[in-house]
Figure 1 (cartoon, rainbow, N blue to C red):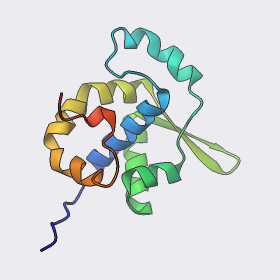
Figure 2: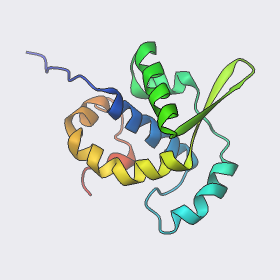
Figure 3: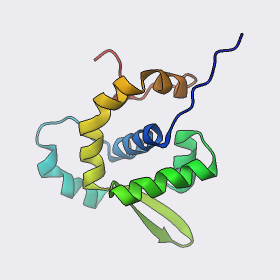
Length: 131
């Protein structure tokens, strides 16, 4: 009998998106002194995600992608710019600090959903369950 697929809510998808944006920064989220360096790092950030990148990252439909983006915008965790008819999505200082503060909580709360989400891909470093 096939394994039952678990429903993933927008909160875990938001976590996936924030961590993907952090990975695009190329930083160690848990480095000492991150707060002091963060504004400079964000100013130099030149690899935003598109809506399609986010849809691909969460592996969901257009409706859920829009819902996640809207929630992250409302929380101030991302900002979005429209350039030449395309949307560029950047993480904010608040988004980086939120990911750092709550990743352990999300890993515990959503352990099985995270494993299921990444079952056909390599588990991202920020969800290393051996730590």
